[in-house]
Length: 518
Ligand SMILES: Cc1cc2nc3c(=O)[nH]c(=O)nc-3n(C[C@H](O)[C@H](O)[C@H](O)COP(=O)(O)OP(=O)(O)OC[C@H]3O[C@@H](n4cnc5c(N)ncnc54)[C@H](O)[C@@H]3O)c2cc1C
Image 1 (cartoon, helix red, strand yellow):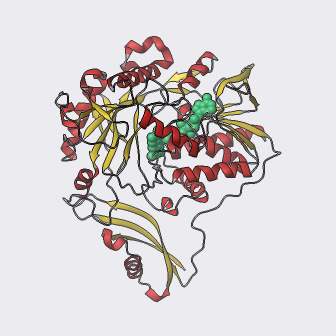
Image 2: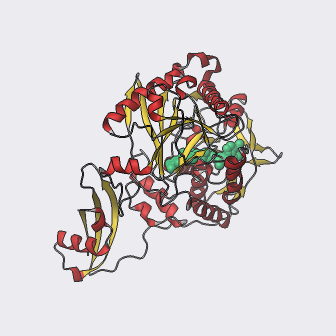
Image 3: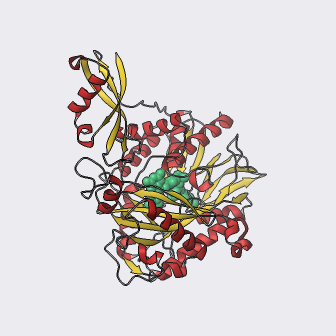
């Protein structure tokens, strides 16, 4: 017999299997000797009160053997000689689209501008050490896409439980720990993601799919409003229906689509800064304790949403115990983002703090039409690069100094490897953004006591929160609204945000493509 029950335990007891077992047994009035084993199937932290509690949902196997599998495996058939389709981009959307095509009996041909996930590492190190950004191999481009050297947070605002679980199961099948199926806020960590991505690629190849690295799509082959395939920078052509999953940083792709008359529409996004605190301080605030997280709790998270000047101001992609990384994807750009290792053990915790921006908020960019916010992003990133000394050194300001419109005389230590330089962000970032940031942060400071401190710094600029344009597609068929056989997919198309939602969108596009191909 199997029985499930909910427990609320203190962090120490929740980490002790014997304590969990006996608490669960007594909750369901089962004899402890009858319990063959148990599984925690859901875990979350309740840090609202001074006494932190861990919520656990536990499944007990009473006089019954626990099944061996902790996740459902998917069967991938061999599709070497099956009908094929082209996928551009090997980020979460592209990789999950490829695996789903295989499941459905279609051979994926994956084209990726960047290098393999391992080779990418050398280029990432160069950004910090030599301040050079390779246009095709960086934190945004390369196998695994933007999500690989990241925090690997796997939560999404989507409510489609079944679809989310499918994505998490696929990750487990390729090497992710089963904890991601249990935790309310699952994350994998930047140290573990590359091996998982490699296994997914090996699966695609073993099933008869093809993967081409260092192959950048330069144009779509379009005839009579139908896509016939793509042409790569090296002159190679790849024919077939196309899933376009190039992410939100591939500005050259947006310009190319615009030139090829592929309909785009403007979309709002959010721009701001990355705020970095000592992780102990965030732990103290969130766990209501001068000792911080103690032995049994993870580095604390926070998230907030507020309104200022008629726009949302919110935290974005928080990385507890993480580091701030240089996420530019080309020259003359300075972009910051965050990532963390699986143990979330760094001395810092960072988060984007951003302001929602609509195209009409910047009338001076009206002349750029649907590309208005893309141009704004470009300009702010270039300004940040100038302010940073024309290197990857990030312009930074202490948090309290920003609130008080003062340039910081000194800066604290930071996790940001290329280094930081003191800069009055309140002077050169657009007032539309800084005024709302200031107001929003002041509101947050009233709730999160201790958050507004000069021990924290803001690094500029957090500008790649989502796509600045949408590649318009049909709601039912997922095909581009005008070009048949083209499936705009994932974050770059403007239909997803984050690893899991991009992966889910990849699966949906694969299913839509299969409906017309098979
Ligand atoms: C540092 C960092 C940390 C992040 N942390 C998290 C997190 O913890 N959790 C989370 O959910 N999200 C996180 N994100 C966001 C997440 O990575 C994205 O939402 C997600 O990767 C989007 O997936 P995608 O497949 O749509 O696009 P991408 O991941 O951007 O993938 C697009 C791929 O297309 C390739 N490409 C682009 N142009 C071409 C071309 N012309 N030809 C061929 N290939 C091309 C790129 O090289 C890239 O591999 C983070 C992002 C960054 C940069």
